[in-house]
Image (cartoon, rainbow over all chains, first blue to last red; front, side):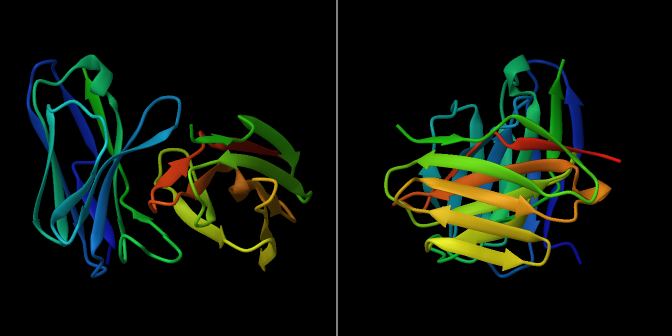
Length: 115
Length: 109
């Protein structure tokens, strides 16, 4: 069974469209994250949710809106897509926010290409 | 500001040993992580250090010096499958992970 699963794995779309990426974890973790990894391979935190509450909201455009219907799911909706949004988006989870080891479990990533 | 530095790329020979260095400057410190990321795949956890010294785990070892803001990942008996990017990340005082850009390790036969 996949621990952290996200869909779709690949997404190709036109500028200006709206798209969503879904994430689910079956590890019973309290905290979930969205990361963006661009072509330079930096992993940048976008959002973190702890028990369905937003904990971190880094400086990302408000075109990006996370939604957490329950602590096992964290979806990412993106409005009015731009070329610069092309990247791999990783969902991740950890047991708690103040985890002593902080080990993250990552999903397989969703490669978004905006044309 | 917060910063993680690691070499962009390294090359090593199958069967050899390689050391990947990482220096960090973060607001507070709650530990240093190493993750492995194969091309096109998700990062996977390798090690966590919060106390000074060497932690050994099979062919991989990780070292931390808190006073120097320095860590390294040591890979022994290199195998072709070790070709990957190795990401260093520091957990700051707010328990946020600050990531380096990763070191691409190329293993040659």
